[in-house]
Length: 364
Image (tube, rainbow, N blue to C red; front, side, top):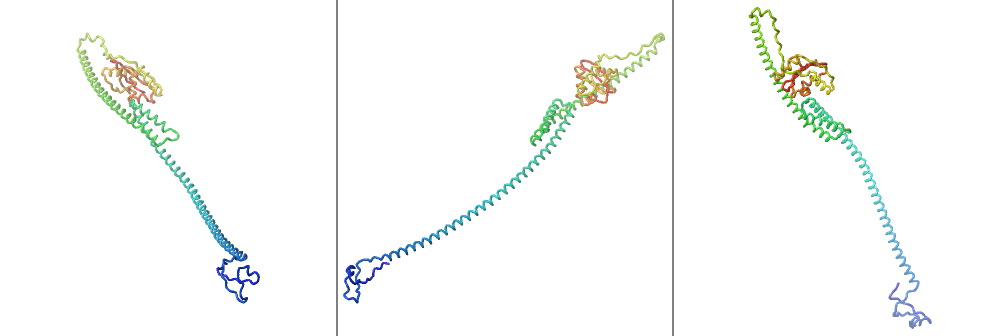
């Protein structure tokens, strides 16, 4: 390398002047001389220095390259390992998600089936309850034939509820409950109307019974007076002169009624017309003199009662057979007799007074 202080030997011979040095005074000694400028390195030395520097640089670069390459490889390996770990974790999560989704789907199906079974069970229970309520309403209607308009409204409610309960598939619980709720009002109204009619009918029958008892007592008193008069007449006849006894005694006069008789055939025909409307066969009709007399007596008394030879008695105003039959049809007891299926004939007696028709009928 460059050395600031170097000594050179003086060349001997002709080349000494070319170097710029003075010749040595003595061939045996080299005197030190002052350097006048840097000496240039020789070419071989320069090349050697350069090679060394290049080798050092190459070695350092190689070392750095190897280190950097190792670091890069390690980074890539770590990155790949992390990617693989993330992929494995994602696969595990996806697999767990699929299992969870399947489990949830099965659970939803089970819950849905259980809910549907519960809904069907509720509908079946409500349908049974609603059907029982419908039958109760029908029983109420059957027991209220004289409820009038209330019975008509109850029949309409029964028909509407029957349509709802008969729907297929079975309607919802709310729909059935709403349909059954429409029965309560008409059912209560029909029951109340029938009770009111029955109370009025009971009062009417009680009044008729009282009138019948009064008429019976009046008839008994009249018979007693007639018997007294007959006894007096017989006693008077027995005391008459003998010349009078030769004549024939007049027969006792029969009491004649001034009440016009009503056609037994017309009244019996009206009863048969009503039976036909109920799907029942007609009965044979015959006039009964005793029942005609009883009808006349009731007309004269202005009240009705049973004579013992009849099943139904009654009166109607205006005097028409259909009016009297309709009155009987609105009474449960009279209606039952007109609806009998174990009879084949009827005996009828009727009379009219002051536009009031009085009738008495026996069924046999």
